[in-house]
Length: 160
Length: 56
Image (cartoon, rainbow over all chains, first blue to last red):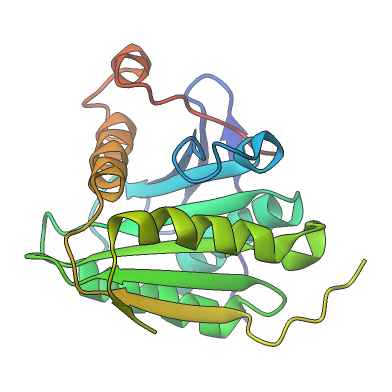
């Protein structure tokens, strides 16, 4: 049974770090977010973070332990009552693959958590997701509604 | 407190232009990745308004 790698927060670099069996270093960075989506709700805004991942080398094969470790870090953050927002971007045309990977992770490991996806069928597609542990929030629906309302203000027509 | 919520996930599709703040998020994410690759400094992130955080 695969287990997560040991991970820790590097106070100097300001990122979560772990090393895979292939010798690659993996990092998870979070930035404060929420200004756009929750400006009217300071108590929610202060709980919102955007997330990014990076590895020191391209992996030659799928390592489930890497996925498990990232999932463990994300779960630890969500269980603290934080909200994670992430975007799959289109620069390298791999956004569909990333979006499917995150969807697969959520299906496999996401019990007890909630994920809301927003897809933009632009010239190049963007995928935006919000993750939370609803049990850690007194008004989880308000968070989702406010997030969606902000997007709706920019995008009139949608198909759910 | 346990919330019983009927729909733990949802997908909304928009057929209009991506909001500028979503594109900005994507740019910020690229900066974070550049920082983790050692191609940007923490000061450069701050100049873009990107403040690293540890929610734990």
